[in-house]
Length: 342
Image (spheres, rainbow, N blue to C red):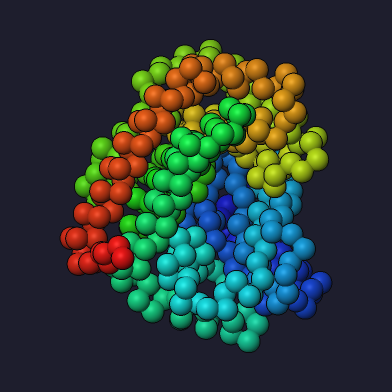
């Protein structure tokens, strides 16, 4: 069957209607993500349908993945309405706020819950001090991640590499949030150069790529061996108790086929997707799992192994300085006056 945006929207509406029939605890359901924002939501012939469900009590789970076919699955985030009890705070929340403000498709809205929260969030949402606060929240997370890596005592290198990549993601999204919603995983490095260009800091795009893989050139043969190792790790972690929802077996093709599609025109974006999810997978595997060995070899090739990690952390420190300076400069240009430390 040919998958179109219209079909995906129809599935979203039907899913919402079915869930409301089953549970009276649902206050609101809305659709976000590529089905709304992309004219071609499929990447590598696959996509997910991102739904947010708000409950009047604490939900039983935070995230739910539901397979629909090999090409499409539901990715559902569950929240309690208590999280939104002060909607003005959403103006400076770097994730919840932007996706409420940017007109998601509302599929169920009990007692105008969404209308109220969007109106309260939207007031002054694009005011420069609120924009900068959202970006600085992400930059602070990146800096905190660097500090944990630099001064912490975590012995497991898998954890260190994952923390490094998470710091890169937060740093990139600190810049991206100045001109739009945060960037999500599969298209992160496809879209980040445009966001850096939008504030006149193309160097931050090149700098992030350098931190990810330095100046490594990867042959097609090496790439294929990485894909095989990555696939093995994804299959292995799916059997582990406590496997993260992000690595649900249904999402295996969603990642693999997207990376294969990106490799030809956006190899660094493909590597980002591979390394982020591969690292998360091996982090949740037993320390003696043979699936970890191919990942370690990929880290050596990319300069993310133990021998080179100290130098990469120093480079991350300098990069975060540049991100923080870019935010300060943006604030100055847009009339945001920093509050002096007391």
